[in-house]
Image (tube, rainbow, N blue to C red; front, side):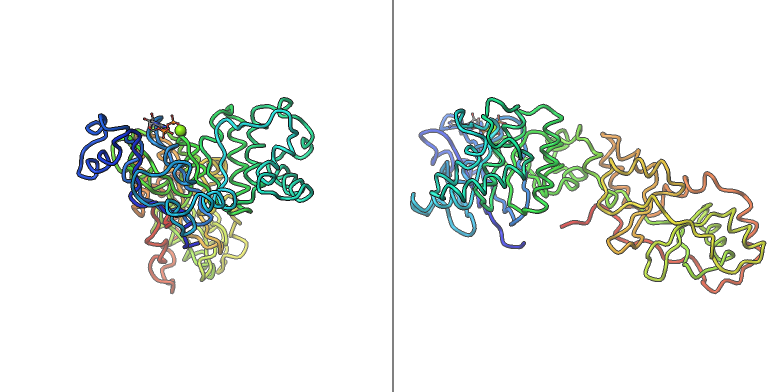
Length: 449
Ligand SMILES: Nc1ncnc2c1ncn2[C@@H]1O[C@H](COP(=O)(O)OP(=O)(O)OP(=O)(O)O)[C@@H](O)[C@H]1O
Ligand SMILES: [Mg+2]
């Protein structure tokens, strides 16, 4: 995963006869406008790496240089200055023949309006790049059929493009790129011409495909929601420059400048923010080996009416409620047996906000957030979900999620019964001693990369 598939170093592209002079001046600090008389600076000093298997999204307004950048990546356009490596090979340095080989064997491209050959069947259209590569008829039909299957077009092999909807035609474009079986896919606004529902379907499908195929994808879009949904990392371009590169969460929570802030202002946060970035430290956790008296004391100390029960490895066992604990305690119970309700609403660290509302509505406690091992690593109170949905104050609220112990007690305590406090005073001899250390200090934004 550490080897980069694509690497760009200080890449410039200026359209115009005096491009070299323009690059020189841009390097010296002149602006795009200042060098305008010398040419159009479409890409200015772009440096980035795309890891193998990564989906790298380039986003920016119209004219910001996205298409120019992607065309340089597959050698369709030579950079005015700078270096571009594909799989370690400097594509400016290779011969025309080698470049053709790289394009055929390593890189496929999908455009916004995919030009299908009208008189050929869907299957032959998908097989087209293989035909150019000189792959034999049987093999290319087999590979193309496989790619059509992957993109949900099985059964349409013998149809003509005119018989397909726009969305289906775009799928043929994707199938064609997949049939070529290159490691790198460059997709320039590949879904932008589709209507929203179909577009969303294609996005889901790409994510699904990516999970099994593990291609390196450079995906261009001016749609932030799409960028954030698809991208492992996102590069934001403005007027030829890359102004920020980061994960969706980094960009959302720490936009580099005012431009990015405005850009992300109307993003559908529910698809981007995850439980991991919203979670707080669980206030009250109770060891599975404790008895009702100890549990009640923990609840009292935490001003909560319910708490999560964990085992020694912090694996979540369920939750306990003060009223039941109290009754059991009065009845002389000394263990939590029969008092621990299994938790059915827990979410995972990577669960997106959009999938947390339903469980949150059901949960009596703040949502438990579990890691891969089922360990309790944090909780998300309902207020945190609501805060996260508010766009403008969002940067604050998302960051404040890192602050440890607020919020949750409000919710958990709201249903509190006064009895709990009294009861615990009857028994002060717990050996567990003090509040059990809870949460990890790192309960902050995402924590990926
Ligand atoms: N072949 C060309 N000759 C001259 N100027 C060009 C050429 N291609 C692009 N440009 C200019 O370079 C700038 C960046 O264009 P580019 O097509 O890369 O933007 P983009 O981000 O892809 O925009 P869009 O979202 O509209 O596709 C624009 O100002 C454009 O006019
Ligand atoms: Mg473009």
